[in-house]
Image (tube, rainbow, N blue to C red; front, side, top):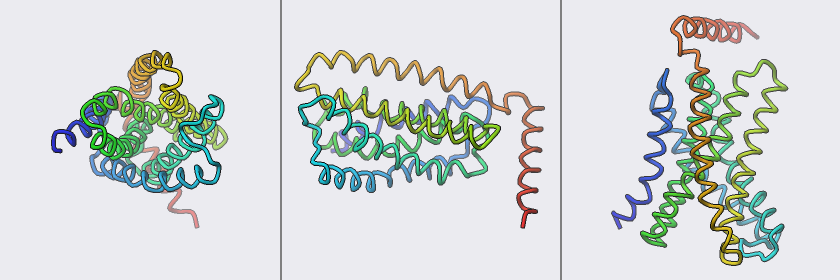
Length: 251
């Protein structure tokens, strides 16, 4: 039991360390990261309830024969529900915190929420399925959740520092939409493996693409950090304090 539990938790722990280390110019304090992770765990319950209710209302199951119906269900009954609750965690908690002060933070907090969600889900699957399930999910399913978090977080980082509300809203919607789309595509591949085994060849491609985006997105946002240069960081902090002062002066 302890070995299976360690196998279930290890992939999320390794990925959390990877993304934390990629924040090169200003490391986030641990408290908001841990809280985001725990809230991601908590999001599993309402996501599960919502998904079950929608399945009962629509009659959809993951074993549906029609590929289009499988994709629609994967997108709107699984992907939108799960990513929507993770998005709520980041947008309502992490996004509003003062520590969210550089574009990379969108990726880091979104990944932490995704990994919290994925950790509990992975424990349940691994305890039921054993070592083989743990290895496969550690290579594919858990990194996939991080991948959805990177897509969502990249654009939340863009939204946080966008010059106007319209652009911020578009970036936010793009992040959520891409996370849902990626989640739906991955799930429909998995749902369809027993009927279309050749789709198994797509999973390594999906995994490789995930890691390419992990490195590319994290490098781009990390390099845009105002803390990359001390003088810019000082100006950034002064501008933030001035904005906070103006907000406090408003009636």
